[in-house]
Image (cartoon, rainbow, N blue to C red; front, top):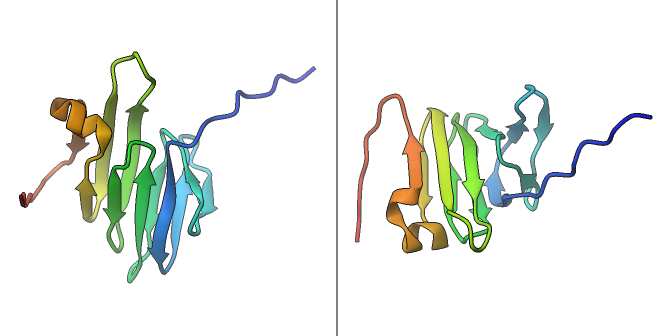
Length: 123
């Protein structure tokens, strides 16, 4: 009897998009994403040239993945009564991130890892 993998709970959904994007899981399997598509912990969202996607997370964080970019959701923890954290890795391209409840409750719990970065802070 084959064991079923436990069903993953989506940590985010693609709220808006223009052009084409795919989600890539830890095994390298890709699937096309459209508005409303789920995004899971451990997945990357990759956009094509002249495309972008706005990913809305459960804590109300919003991440805009710019054209020809690749952003991985390294970890996302938002269970009540547990330490909460949100870690993304920018593999290629550009991203704009607005933190939600996790960042408001504990700013150091949200991290964006990059190899090289240019940052602009407003507000």
